[in-house]
Structures are given as structure tokens and as C-alpha cells.
Image 1: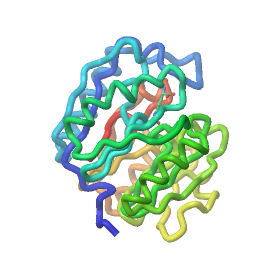
Image 2: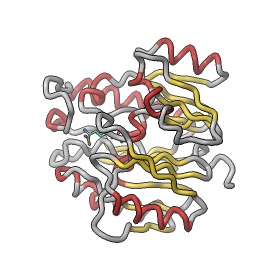
Image 3: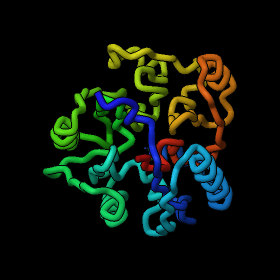
Length: 261
Ligand code: CIR
């Protein structure tokens, strides 16, 4: 096992939100993010990750890709390797190509998945030795299989999880707290997909708090979830809440807005 490779990082790639975030994909058409507030929340997010130890690779907004602020969906990063993914939503296909030159600059090895399958980074949860991959509306079997082949070569054991239809991405409802502990909603925990891990269950009614980011010593959680905040602090984690009201309107959260390595 490669100790702590799942949350000990030095860098983060982020992309500023475009004004076109108003056109981002979303489940609820009645919600529209306010671009200026989104930009401010993103700036705070970047500042906090920096304080947690990240050297920030800041990319400019791209108006033609309304969801391109969610860089996590375009690649998987660990140690000196990046794997370029194939996002599953047609309006996001081009985002992988967009990020590739940046990955080439920062990683010794940049790999592409074989075949024509689709996979979003939001469906991949890496622990130190497991790669949980959700089958979702965005990630299909051939995308999952192609990624699994590469991850096996890098000492990850791939675990396939069919996620319930009403969940966008696997990590919409879970996140890694440390090498052996996962924060997960009751719905995901009920799938019994994390044998050997300790599960801290997201308090009922606060399911939207599940998408956390562990970056070095800090756990970032979306603001507005007092039960989750208290639960994680009581469990001994250093937790910092960050306001994500605007990304949440287009189904994005904390993990989606950075590639950590
Ligand atoms: C989308 O539907 O693709 C975006 N509006 C939200 C992507 C969120 N990404 C993530 O959970 N990894």
C-alpha cells in the first residue's frame, strides 16, 4: 500500500468559473448560479486549498464550456501520473482535450484510456489502495473497464459500484476522510461497497454535505451543514466549511473544482 497517497498532496489544478456557468448542466432547471458570486466562492475555495499546502495551477475561464470549472471530471491524478478521462455528457466531451496540455506540463506520465467508453472523475474515489468506480449516467462499463486496466497497473484494486439512478456521481454522496475512513450517505453505505473501511454516515437531511475534500491535514466541507460539521470535528478532523451555494445549483461541489496531486 502507498501510505496516504489519497490525501497528501502538494498541488491543485483549478479553473476559474466562466460567465457561462449559468448554462451549466443541472438536474433542477429552476436553479441558476450567479456568476459573480460563483467567482467569489471559487476564489475562497482556491485560497483555502492553498492554505492547506497546495501550489495552485490556475487556469483561465473558458466560456464555451459552461461546466469546465469542474476540472475533476476530466482526469484522474496520483503521484506523477495523470489519466485523461472521457467525460460522459456531450457538452463536456471537449473538456478533456482542454486540460491535457496542463497535465503534460505537470506530470511525468500522462495516459489516455483506451476505447470509446465514457467516464467522469466524479465517479472515481481513490483511497491509498482501492479505486471505487461508480457506474452512473456519465460513466459506462467500457469507460470503467478501460480506467480499471490502468489503475491496476498502478497498484489500485478497482471496485465497481452501480450507483442509484438519482445520484449524479459516486462522489456526490461520499468522500475520503483518511486512508481508512469514508464519509458516506446512508444510501451509499447501504450498498456495502466499502468493506474494510470505517464509514462515518452523513447525518440524515444533510446528504449534500457528503462531497468533501481531504487535502493534507484539512477536511473541506460545504457550509450550511451543522450536524456534519460537528460530527467530523468530534471525530477529530480539522474541518473548514466553504460556501458552495452557486456550484451546487449546477450539481457541483467541493471535490469537482480541483485536481489534487
Ligand atoms: C455536470 O452536470 O456535469 C456539472 N454541472 C456538475 C459536475 C459536478 N462534478 C462532479 O461531481 N465531479
